[in-house]
Amino acid sequence: MSTSNSPMPADEFVGALRGLSHRYWGSHPFHRRLHDGSLSEFELRTWAANRWYYQSMLPQKDAAIISNCPVPQIRRDWLARIVYHDGGAEGEGGRERWLRLCEAVGLTREEVLDERHVAPGVRFAVDAYVTFARTKPWVEAIASGLTEMFSGHLMRQRVTDMLASYSWIRREDLAYFTNRIDAVSGEGQATVDIVVEYSRTLVEQEKAIAALSFKCDVLWSMLDAIERAARKE
Image 1 (cartoon, rainbow, N blue to C red):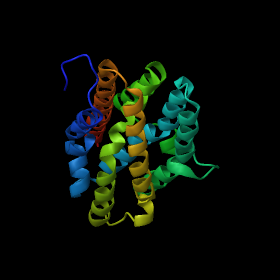
Image 2: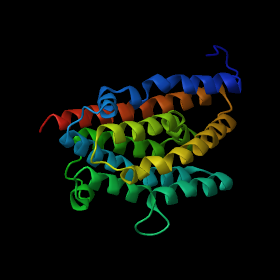
Image 3: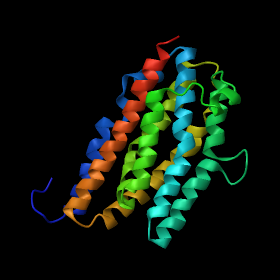
């Protein structure tokens, strides 16, 4: 990283952002167990019910970004993310696909929607992420979502591994992931482009990197809390 006050060249800045990939939750021990097929049915249900809270709050996080962003084109483009998760109508969208996954692992919609299984640590981490998006400058809030740069390959591997390891789960039950893979690829580059364009000083670049680091901490903390909750069986 540059030690001068001038901004990093774009390729160096993007490299610094991508350099945080080792802190993404894909390397968390719980995720590794999810992929190697060693989670119990209770652990899978705990994961799905808690991850639901994260999924359900993403539209509010994205709405917070729009509310703080002064650039009309970015607001228009970002609106599509809200619709993606909430759906264009009832029974559509990423939230609905996640609920179907919850049902596939043995949860009822009622127990997922009333959040009875959400661990305090998960709620705290997710709420902190939404608060970050509401209170930080919009570019930092967008930068925090750059974990999507790391997620496409992991989603592809998750579909393969879950189908191989958990015989009661069907490919259609994993529609959240199969549908999201291509979307993440496009969104990831678009988000990088925005962050690079609007992080115009070294300080702004460093804050963007710190925002992405914060998001990695949020995701890792979620899995820590899920892992603890899953031990209570």
